Length: 182
Image 1 (cartoon, rainbow, N blue to C red):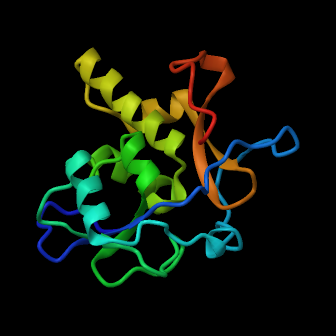
Image 2 (image 1 turned 180 degrees about the horizontal axis):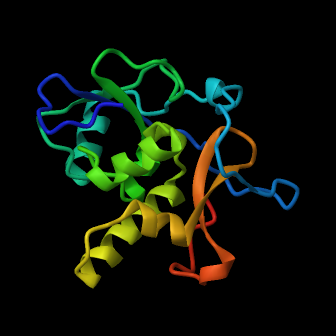
């Protein structure tokens, strides 16, 4: 994962796929304390539908991806593929959910702590992290991994290798209505 402010050699491979559909009643998300290695079987089958540089450039402009990042269509790469050196694959949905490039240091801390790549976090996972950053800012305190872990637990999404965060029952809800597409 590369998220440096010296972004001249960084690139972002943008993937757009309908990978985050609503889970069925039979597909309950499982909570995990120490996440296992993600399943690659589903992610291996998801190809990006963003095929033109123009579409990627428009998306980057909309979400404020700095010009120093060489954003380009992922082509035939899958999000679980090893990206080219100095690059990271991200989903369009993650940008739309609040993920920003370069990654906020708090997001890097969360990803590092749980051993996740940006492409392994569902859009609602990015919404939770972005919302936590906003709440921390409005409270006038720096975002803390310990406080985040107090309120949220990492959950496996439908046993398919993507993860999201769920509020812990013991502390109450910080965020209520989330989109049904994770």
